[in-house]
Image (cartoon, rainbow, N blue to C red; front, side, top):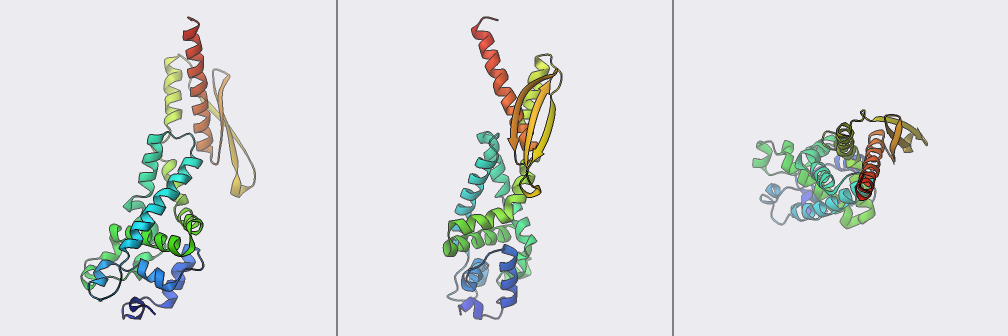
Length: 248
């Protein structure tokens, strides 16, 4: 048993088991998980105990890769700037601490007396760092695939929520502005879907003045519409280049 696990403030086996269940993982060691929730303030009061700082460093790197890979493959209509903005919002201290609270991570943190008295269990920085440390120990002990599964299990709803929020409908906004400049009516989107409820595929077509301008497919209605708008912008840009080349 580790020194942390043997200390008076250590979590009960039941509390650690509850966290493992909420993380939806198997095979993680209690020693590793305990280190992941050990703040440096606790280590200052317990000689020889390792903090979660190195695990947090590792988890931060894995988190960035997993989220970057996921949004790159999922949101193909997003340009580099939108992908960067989306990733930053998802891996922010605010978002990570929100997720940490949802799994009760703050309740099992090992903190020093001073940090405990100052409300450390509710501090965004401590919660987010500890969650990254958990991701780090999962990667270290179980490998990348397990870490990726855990990160997406915890963050996929946040990714979708941020992606559907303000600031990511660039193609639809740009298409509407372009059609107005061309003297055309606002775009109309027609969407249908296929597949089972847990894996629906949405197909969108965008029309203006009775003409289909573009089409797109996605895992959500909004994403399909955005891809349709992107397709329409590409076709309109090609048509405009052709007109200029022909002297029209």
